[in-house]
Image 1 (cartoon, rainbow, N blue to C red):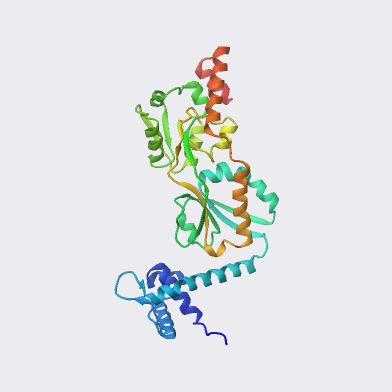
Image 2 (tube, helix red, strand yellow):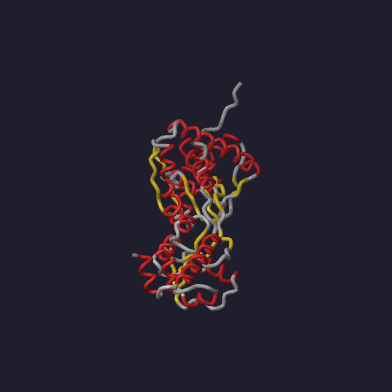
Length: 329
């Protein structure tokens, strides 16, 4: 004889309330009233003849019986959602909405996007430049590629790549204003892609004492990198987003010193979407594309800069301002 299961709606109300920690938050998530959630939880407790929550505090706390029930209910809803998504999207076709760290999206993903399109021509992508982890909880977003710690609640995440940071600058700038030692930094403009913590980490590792007088702060690393490309100052590049710019000689690395970034790049999505084919193929592509093209390290660029300076010195260098114009023309 098949065991009789509790009704579905009360189980949903119980799971949402336990996960959110309050009846009000569960009501907002399920788009019902506070009273409806309370009624459904009471109905479930009556059905089970057990109290599931301890009442009295600001945040609801599970009883022993509630803690026993929650993992099974969460897992069951996850499997149902995953199977439903697979039924709706059984093949690798359709639409996929992805948020991605702005610098990573512009400088790494978009230049490689054709390799994904060639493999999966029936997948239509919507790409959004964002590093907001709240996208993980939006029904309109399928995958988030985030710069952070990787421990976002109620979601699946996997480390995509750690990062190392190092100064980068345009050849035009370094030709017109040399950067041969740490003391030369005082004559340059620092370009920040955050609140200053990352540059402070690098400067501390370099024992730099002569700090630049001019410093500009920007909302993300994409903007600071673009400013460096235009010769506006020295930015911090990383081993992923700056790799192709270094390989093409558009950015140079004046120092061999690099430091670990504060955070790493992670791929994340809701648990219910992780096994759907269209999500799985994109995540698999992200990792395979990284493995196929890790990019050059910062040392190769520093050595290239040194060789370039040696050749220029031997040939007889033109005045700095002239060389700068010639490089950009």
